[in-house]
Each structure stands twice: as structure tokens, then as C-alpha cells.
Amino acid sequence: MNENNVTCKEVMSHICDSLGEELDSPKCVAIKNHLDECPDCRQYFNSVEKTIEFYKLYNLEFNPDAHNRLMNILGLED
Image (tube, rainbow, N blue to C red; front, side, top):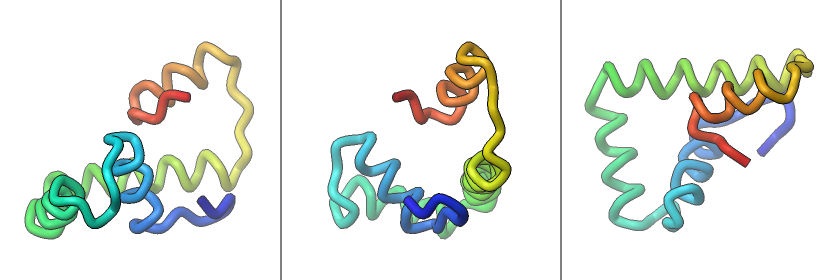
């Protein structure tokens, strides 16, 4: 992923990679279609995307426990 700007495609790719799926797999296509049609999920997706973008943009340093909790909440565990 680009260090300064995260795109929707990169986030979808990360989600699908985390699920062990290809970007064009039926599961990932269904997720994308759902995001296109569901305003609540789209808003959540956008807030996660912005959180990741700001986290990288400002290069914030958290203690390891806070970092791990944030990654866990975002579903981005190492």
C-alpha cells in the first residue's frame, strides 16, 4: 500500500488478502457490491480507511500495547 494515501482498492485488496481470497473472488465481489449498496457499511469502511490514512500520514508513535489494540480493532493484526 502507498505510505501516504490508501485507496479503496488497496483496502479491498487487504480485506480480501486477509480472508485468503483473490480480489475478483465471489466473496470479495459480494463484499464490494454490499459496500456499494449499504450506506452504513460504506461509512464504516470510509472511517477505517481514513483512520489508516491518518495513522500513516502523521507517522504516529504508539506504545506497543496501544498499537496492537488499534490494529486489533481495525482487523489488521500483524
